[in-house]
Length: 114
Ligand SMILES: [Zn+2]
Image 1 (cartoon, rainbow, N blue to C red):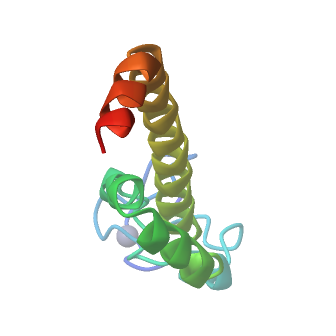
Image 2 (tube, helix red, strand yellow; image 1 turned 180 degrees about the vertical axis):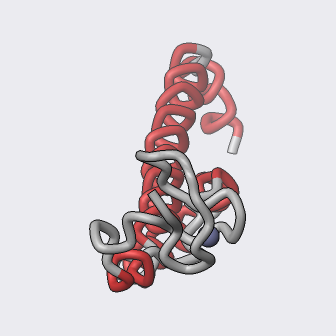
């Protein structure tokens, strides 16, 4: 087969021309599909970390990006959910530790002295 763009002979079944780099089965990949992928939508782990430590920001980014940057939105949302679960778990653990060490009698003595 021959490249439509530069006309050089290339291997059958190639997806890209090795000479000019143009996509060869351009008909099967409409330009509209390529444009739909937002180059900023990297889905970076950084957004999950941000959502984890700043849950509110994570949820806001998730809502804002849901359509434009679905990968980033997903990461931010997952981070926020993880942050909520982690925060809740830590709260329960702290409460359990505090309650198990809670000495009701000494508190009663302190209150009696007041
Ligand atoms: Zn070519």
